[in-house]
Length: 96
Image 1: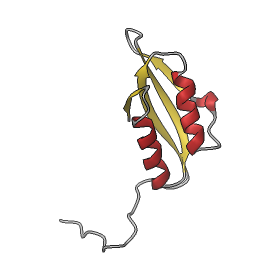
Image 2: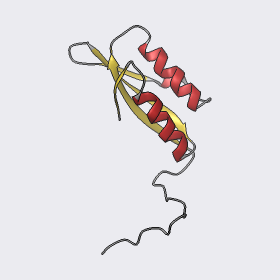
Image 3: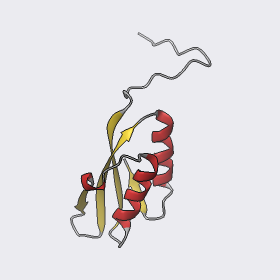
Image 4: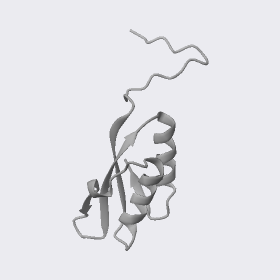
């Protein structure tokens, strides 16, 4: 069964219900200031972001850090811009 596309100009349906807690995984080189820089980005897009909730995991050999930032997602636009900002940050290797 095929799904009928939404009419032109109709708002896109989202699978995410807003507002909601939304985890974002970020990986970067283990460097001074990496976690703080990612927290600053999260705070820019979510003023209620709590830095105490950041989960940090070093890579097996300790060269990289994987962190999880759980932001309060309020819109698709907010998440899109947050992903764009993170993926273009010079300290970031991967964003999931």
